Amino acid sequence: MRGDAGRQTPQGAPGRVEAIHIAPVSGARMVPLHRVRATPGIGLQGDRYALRVGYYSQDRRVSRDLTLIEAEVIDDLRTGGIDLSPGETRRNVTTRGVALNDLVGRRFRIGQIECLGTRLCEPCAYLQGLVGMPVLAPLVHRGGLRADILVDGEIAVGDSIDVLDG
Image (cartoon, rainbow, N blue to C red; front, side, top):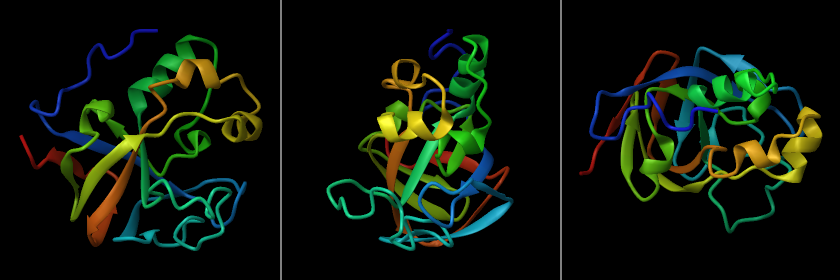
């Protein structure tokens, strides 16, 4: 697996939104969207965590507004024999061209919305059970980013991802 080779740093060119997915309830198949409304403290309109019916909704210690994963990580999984589509990762936004781990603690914009990267979105046994593939080890420190939504608006496939600080 090639790691972070080829990914832009936050100081480089902006990344892009490659896919958007939500699930209406816990464990449901992720639904692809071209555009979605994002609300601070709530999440993405129609998503299980915005509706407070996600598997981890009762755990308020972690932000559930928005989750992101790099398309490059999904590509790496495929070369390692794990074939997941962007929606199967259970993350809301699939990005390309941005190193998400570098956004922890940083403000960034996706389309109209502003976010704050809060922590890595590490893989869990629940995810592995849903996808039915051994994703825990390959996704450690590569499972994506959790972010708080700070300014509401819409995000769409193709939107740029721009770092706002530093």
